[in-house]
Image (cartoon, rainbow, N blue to C red; front, side):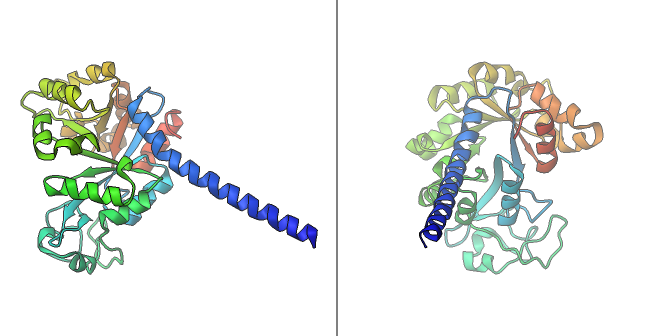
Amino acid sequence: MKNVQFILGAILTLIFTTSNISVAQNQNRIKEITEHLKNPSGEYVLVVSHRGDWTYAPENSIEAVQRCIDLGVDIVEIDVRLTKDGHLVAMHDYTVDRTTNGKGKVSDLTLEEIKQLRLKSAIGVKGSQITVPTLEEIMLVAKDKIMINLDKTEGATVRKAYEVLKKTETVDHAIFKANNSMEEMRKKYGALMDSIIFMPKLWYENEDVVNHLIAYETDIDPFVYETLFDSQDAETFKLLPQLDKQGDSFMAICLWDELCGGYTDENAILKGNEATYGWLIEHGADAIMTDRPQFLIEYLRSKGVHK
């Protein structure tokens, strides 16, 4: 009898220990991702998946986010909008028309009405059983596993998103971003800017992108910038060495030509990963946003700069 009790005790201890190790590893995951962003070294390139892995499941869905977690993606970019009754849901467009079987503006629909809708697949096929998630639902799935890059956060959405993050204890999991100047962001959000991870966009259409960068560095000193360039002649492209000198991360957006000078996911298909993702890394990309997360991860791992 004592032997049985001893064996059962050993099994329970092993289960408990393994569980604790797993929890600790998950909690360290967010710290690891953040450290890679804060201390870019060229030895690790972060993978950022655009709207989740939408080739696997509908864009901005829980299933698309979970797929990214399973693949080992570091950051998922999602879009959020406010419903009529003040809830944040994951939706790229102002309307639900393109991505669901319903019609109408998100702002004209209640959460209950949106939850009745079903998401379409990437090629627009109706009949899915997958529903539109709230930001809260996404953050609970992401917690301790993956960071979230919040897009379409503007106006009241930023403060509402922050409330959700506080509630789910995931403030350190989320990266906010905007085109606005530092002055505009301070005027809109005041001290909140000191409580969130904020990634300014360096856009080639910024009126004075150099002073735009200086203002951010002087105030909140961000550690990562989303840097967009339509060509190598763009002022933003010429700023990449400055970001490197400052020790800041540069997130490349390789979704379409105007965002990365033509070094896109499509270019990777046509000319190869080395000529595309390799070129971006060579020019300082510490993180790459992609619509091909699995292919990008496989390439980066083959180069020894992802795990």
